[in-house]
Image (cartoon, rainbow, N blue to C red; front, side, top):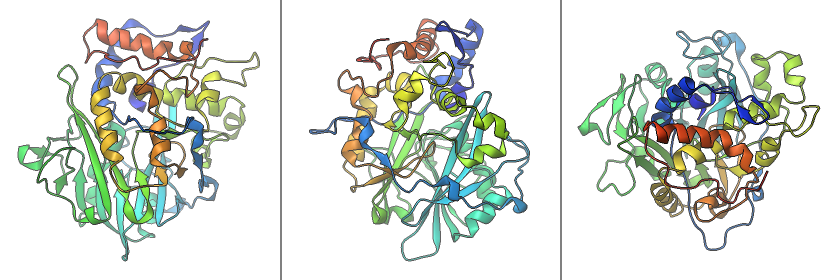
Length: 416
């Protein structure tokens, strides 16, 4: 999500500030690194993406352990020397361990989700981040690291895996298929080739896979793994969604986000000074840059942003993924979601970015993808705010840098 978002989104009179060369370079990396996630249809869906709410999201109550160490060498991206980890409870024997993810002018939280296994002190760790002294102390206070999962092949999630698995060599390691690039390669299963630089015990089975090996923790977690390989793209994309049956929790990486109201979470204070954080437009700008909408202002004093107002307080599909991923593989995406809805029921969602836990039923979750079934103005992102993503899609198509767009992802958007 964030690799592409490092592009400047500042606008003047709604004209994009982006050079052709920059657009080409961004587009080359885009289609191989962005994840394709969920869409579905339901018979009687809720009417609005605003039906979902937050419950139990209290980052201000986070626990830290700065004295244990906040650096990791070599750092891939900022923060370079003060990579803080904040731990807070998600309820139902689950915790968030958050670090900051910084690409250019984009800053966001990235969350490791930790679940304590039923009737034991064993931990299931989904999407581990950089194992600083602080991160490891906060993790080990919860129990014993027993299982490690890499749920997708996005750069920001797979980059820390080698360092983390070296720190916990006794833990089982299962990864999403379709890994490629500088952090290792792995096909659909181990037998077809898997060279990640660390031991891999198994590859998460894809939808429709028969007689695939299953992890030992599959008795507590159901899973559905999407794998899409479009020949025009740089590589495949994959993402696994899990339902933790004992807690009735859907655990997903990038498929949806819930943007909370400001102020920004306290961890932002480890990277930005207090004056910056107190600026009225800081949090709206931060959100818009993360989801790749333009910084169009709705007032002369620069305190309101229509794109932010259209996305906050809702369970939504990140606009960047809606525009780049869903626009190219809507059928595969629908099939994945339909399979997710056949898993055990859930009443809340934990995600890797922005706010969690999110109170949501499967039907409310499906509303976030209703645009794949019919034109919709929900969420109410104005047509002009899709212009930048539209232009990048045009660059990709005109220069044959990836698979073509086959679906109008913004049909039904409200007029300017």
